Image 1 (cartoon, rainbow, N blue to C red):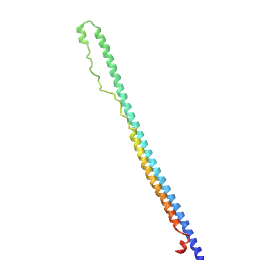
Image 2 (cartoon, one colour):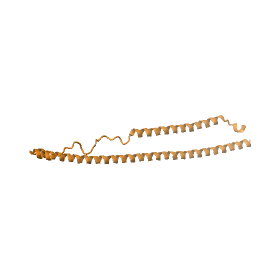
Image 3 (cartoon, rainbow, N blue to C red):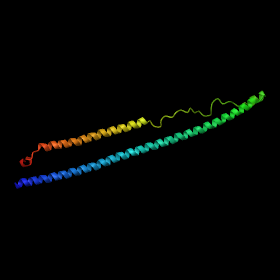
Image 4 (cartoon, one colour):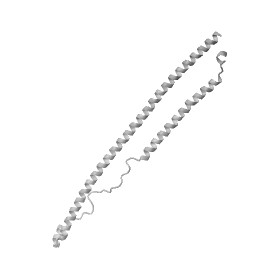
Length: 172
């Protein structure tokens, strides 16, 4: 009988040790998982910040280009107005020779070639959304798989424990 008690006490100690080891492994896994997720979040935030920076730089460059175009257009408008005033003055003269001498050449086209067209979107939002959704789906798939594996491990442990009887230790 003393032997059975000793065996049971040893089994209790083994179970306590297994529980402690299991708890330690779970805590280590939790710490590592937190570090991995923190790293993922940091990487996402870094890429997001870089994207925002690039978008701002592109917008500033586009605005500077637009401002330069506007300045050039205003200069051309001023030149055209000046030419128009001169032409009106020349047309008022009655001397045909003087009219032909002072007739300024009429510009056939403006100095600059600018067909202002709508700029393509600096970034196609759909591409960003697709990438984010794809990353999220991939993460969800992998995490669901890991969670299922962890849960299956629990059911396998429970099934093993159910197979053992209280007499297994005593029978050897």
